[in-house]
Image 1 (spheres, rainbow, N blue to C red):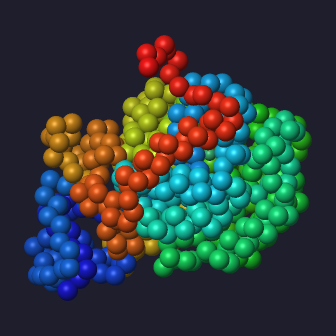
Image 2: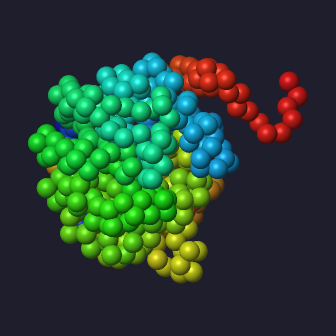
Image 3: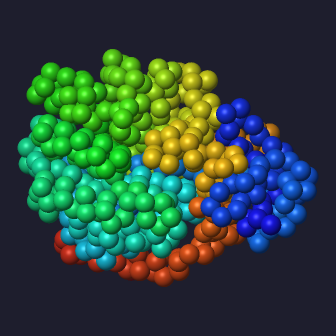
Length: 467
Ligand SMILES: [Zn+2]
């Protein structure tokens, strides 16, 4: 007897040989996958389960790992569309986020987690949590919703961004010592909690927001507490210019200088749009992960990251949705499609980013970037049971010739039907089982405009409105 049996589905295992099992089954017991194979074989071994799912016409695959998420920005969806980067940040995103109460941070985290689950994401890396969003409220929300996540505490000791010394909105600035103390407190309270579903990481600000000494302290502490580090890097050309002018270094040379490289610590560098080719070998040798966020890079006009080039150089590249104002959704299936198609046009070469390569980024590569490592990202006996079921019996998905390319190019998040995280069914037939989704939607719809009003903003349509 096992706890969950998924049968008669097409299993995209993502195992070493990348096997796809037709009429396959997955048996889950506790929080682990115990058996994977042909349904006829698995039901002989496990004839009964507490919960059984007939997955005919469905894909069974590992849940997506979103390596770059801003939980607190779900509530800011649509707050800064079609603005210049400076206005986007200084007139909307920072003033609004800087006015948050922990209650709003918690609400945004719940909204974000629900959206992620509903589009098949089972594990995420939050990039930088400000104390205003609720250093206990946010992990508690993640615990309650039932997700797996690495939550990084924002760390900064300068108010700058690249060579703009006062770039950070006064309400978003933090004191370096306090932020470090809060991060360590969070580690002590939350790291490994919720059956090891929650990890706490270090989230230093982009170069310009911290001194070299502070970065080194972060590197030391991440090693001491055996956790990870994530930061935005080389997102825009200003970043590159700053590191070259101030330090005479490329981004990865600077990271090495600041002790923010592995392989003895996991580091996720986000965006890397302007990362020069001489940095690729440093990334490979130090085992760092690059997190590609194509929607954000396109919407904010940051540029095109050299992703196929990095993959060819042996760099581990994962995928991320970034935030509510920069994407504006947290749907990894949409993100996979963008990652697969933009580089084809940029390089005038349709074979550079096959669907298979992109699905690897969203699963195994993302898992490798986290501390769960090879315990996640594939469907194999012994692995953690983070599994999703996608309904492929739909007019926009049939006929399904290659399920991997149909998933990447034709599907969207709402085709995800059932989601299991750590062996627990958190969504069944698109209904969230852990918290009241309607209540969160109702509250978020109301609170979003309240946050705008607090800053005297009325954000609405650009066209005349008849009330
Ligand atoms: Zn970001």
